[in-house]
Image 1 (cartoon, rainbow, N blue to C red):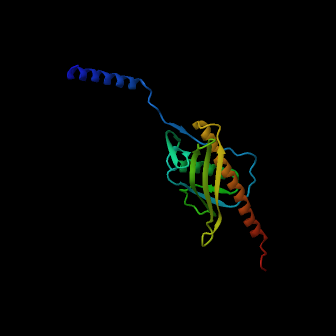
Image 2: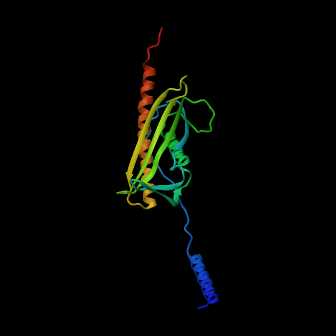
Image 3: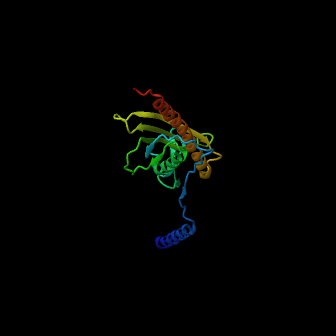
Length: 213
């Protein structure tokens, strides 16, 4: 076979492969949103106003792509399934809505609000991934920090780390998103209970103080 004939054949083969690839559907990214739902009725506490700061998410979980732990020393990022918005923004929006509906505070202000408030609440997420080493499970690790904005030294009223691990029906993204939603709802439920206890005790202490004559 001559070199020129071989070159012609290779060109036609290449064009054929390009045509086949062109006919194949291009994978598209799928964007997902978590959902949380409160149960029962909220008892108003009237603990004053609070400003909810940004939710800081540590690397590498701050990116929108899903992260999977596939072995003790191996992780994988999913480039075709991702959160609708960056996780910090997404989780904060859900937490903000949860705090508003909890009726613990008389007002919940956003991060851009410059008005004076009674409390500041900040949070950091150190883990947001699916653990696929054995039974598929969704995990979220988050720390919440409540500060008395009225105190001179900005007293820390509540500081706690929450760790939620929820089993998923499968490793399918749809099932993982449902498990992440349940994990974040579990954390917010525990946070609400802690805030009610801490702020309720402080309110009782203020009401129980003896007024000097």
